[in-house]
Length: 316
Length: 285
Image 1 (cartoon, rainbow over the protein chains, first blue to last red):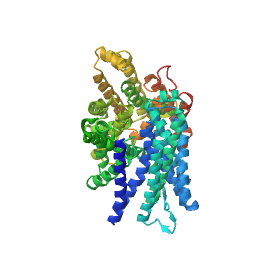
Image 2 (image 1 turned 90 degrees about the vertical axis):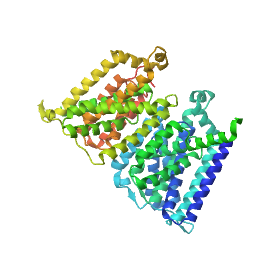
Image 3 (image 1 turned 30 degrees about the horizontal axis):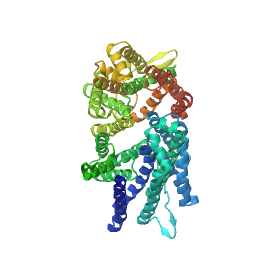
Image 4 (image 1 turned 120 degrees about the vertical axis):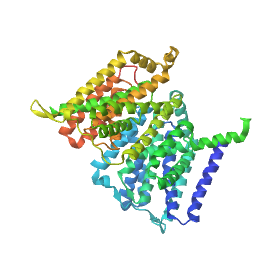
């Protein structure tokens, strides 16, 4: 329990720091960096609902992420930004539902493979067959940002505050979900799906719900990324996007509310720093990832837990 | 006719890859995400050997050995410590391999497309039943059949095969009977990596060698392995034939839709028989 509180304190500190950074420094780069962390953080928080809570390793989250981006790019010019963002969330959830119809027929590692294959199918469709809508490999430039309440969010700073608002709402909803009966049921499913089934949980339905919620998070964050960059392309649907969010989540600590956000921050900062003096930063990241998988399976959040235990001494 | 030859050659290529993948899964319980990367690495190492020696055959002989050795090293250093954990961690590790292998390839060979020329012996097409058949395709079929036969002999008839089968069906029991299971695991991972590289070498004269080649092939491989039933080598060969022929037919009759054939096959299989079309009872994972 104390672990949870430590986590939350750290998280609150991080968010506070993020709010302060753009106020303190006028640099566009750090603003951009923190905006990216907020967006990917939301993505990772949603991803962890199925990865950390339900124990399902999806390699297909790029599909929902990219679809959210496309939904916003196509709809926002006609229907306004907020409705389009809502549709992006729905599109993510609907696509997750569609994928789950196939992918949830199998479990464990098969699920990973199937989500990967199905997401790749979406990627191929978007870059070739659906060119009329998606602009093919060229993508869609000029994705809009909101202009509302008399605030112009084309200003990077204003948009950054908009991102913080969405992020905080998203994390708050997730915090409630995780401690709700639904969250507990997911934990039961991860711990022992057979037993959960016997107790009377509808395991498939639970998994499906979690996958859809996670898909909605992916859709929203994809839409926000498209809006931040004014651009959406099939690259967002590419499997490496699924890989990135997985690395981030694991790096930060799966199964915790705030760990994934930490992972995103470390990932983005590492990328920013490493790419300054080597173009091969992705390989270094791979080595860091391998080392983390072996020695730090619970990520940075797990490290805090260890420190906490040391701090408490031999009392436990 | 040429459709059949192309289909068969594609099938055997897929089988070489899928065999390694399914072998590793059967023994280690690991789905090797890096299989495609090892395939790519095999092609690059072959290119390098051809570049140095001018002979494709030396590449064919040595590139798989180099990659197999690398596979063994990877297994010992990274996978061995995490077998006792959940399977997800092993999957994650192999995902990490992809990043490192791809970056190393980019570092060593750069981003340009590489080309391995078709060996002189098979550079001329052969006239067969009224159509021109590229003879290298025939070589792939013959070579693939040979390797498959050797693989079956190795697994079904040899002592090593018996040890592998024993260790994969019950590793603790095998350990108790005095089999060094961790050494068998390393051997199997090396063998699987070698097979992936062999696939890469054989494919090298047919395709441009580039970083993305591994990933486009790995999905097909996963599909073959799932359709055949994970860990089931005999199922894999039938599934490879099915997919290879379907793709070749697709190239001839509906080239627009060929990329989707793979996924349709996958989805139909999972909707009808989730444990694989050719699985026997009790072997589903």
